[in-house]
Image (cartoon, rainbow, N blue to C red; front, side, top):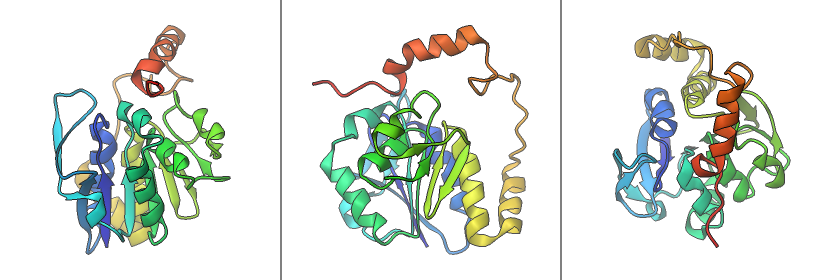
Length: 216
């Protein structure tokens, strides 16, 4: 089973690494990090780089596709090399997945038309204008399409998909091995729980964080 994790300039590291930690432990899994060109790819902070092993053109029939989100997503919404690749590999993939604003790229490729999907809470409303049906859930399955909400939800998505593929006991064993037993120090991980002024602050900054439009 080949799992292709897409990298691009200014993606969010945990969007890619979270699902990788669980999906790479599936029986017979071969995980490959892919980008338009192989080599180092910088994350959204610019401080961290990850290496794309192979170019998109060399990975043509992955079983699982993982598309992370991040600020760099906005510049790729009409980027033919990536969108055409997503359409091509989706024709044969068993699962096509995303984390955070990665779902906007799937939608831009026309893969989520009429389908239930989620994204980061700051970007979720954009799904509707791209033809999808926005859902306020952490992980959303619609056929072979699996979308996760913001950043950390990619860990949940990877575990949930692992359970679908290899069974609940395998996924539970991976969860235990990772000691994924979240007890956050603050109960502010959702706009419904966080202090209102913090929600407002992030909304005001959102065009610069996640949802900025490409420059004309």
